[in-house]
Amino acid sequence: MTKSQQVSFRRMDEGSFEDYKLLHDYEVDYHKETPRRILEQLALQGKESLSGYQINRLEHGLQSASRAEKDGADLDWIVAALIHDIGDGLSPQNHDRMAAEIIRPFVREEVAWVVEKHGIFQMKYYAHHYDWDPDKRDEFRGHPYWQSCADFCERWDQMSFDPDYPMKDLDHFAPMVHEVFSRKAWDDDVIKAGVVVGLPASRH
Ligand SMILES: [Fe+2]
Ligand SMILES: [Fe+2]
Image 1: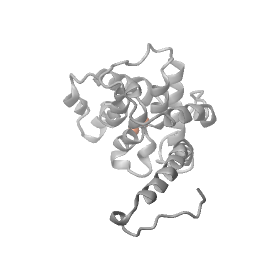
Image 2 (image 1 turned 45 degrees about the vertical axis):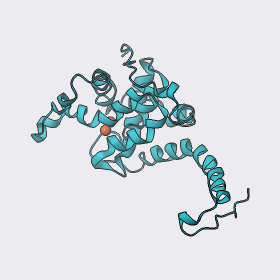
Image 3 (image 1 turned 180 degrees about the vertical axis):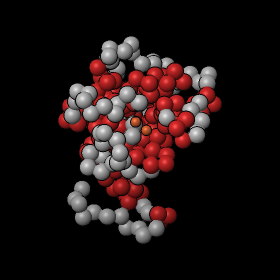
């Protein structure tokens, strides 16, 4: 396959089997680069992110992941903590859901749910200052992953705005990003639907 190969069609419904075989082959190679693109997006958050905080969004992710790692959390949790705010730049109003969709094919269902809902659960810590409902999370009470999300926010997310915390750098987490985002997408053995692992005991 050379780089110059292209499909014959200009509208999808006119494509041939060979066209779609070609696209599939290219897609396989393209997917292999997902981990690199994830890391580049995280690095970008070290250059441009929300003002006013004492650390930038890259550092916030690094700190969250460092805390997860120190607690002995598994790979799914560590990478989720690292990328949970990766959506801030492109979809600030629903950054939690964007991050969840990015990681969902490659981690436990529990972990993706926690990333998706962390924005709502996180309101517990600040919403009263804006006259919003800090207990909006209560609409999910009774959900099997509720406690995991509450713990994720309590121990890793809301804690990680400290410029003095000894956080690991992006190079440290890069192999973990490669491992998670190189997994077979939607593998039942990874997704583990309905399984609650929860967070390990705190070592902080
Ligand atoms: Fe967030
Ligand atoms: Fe966060």
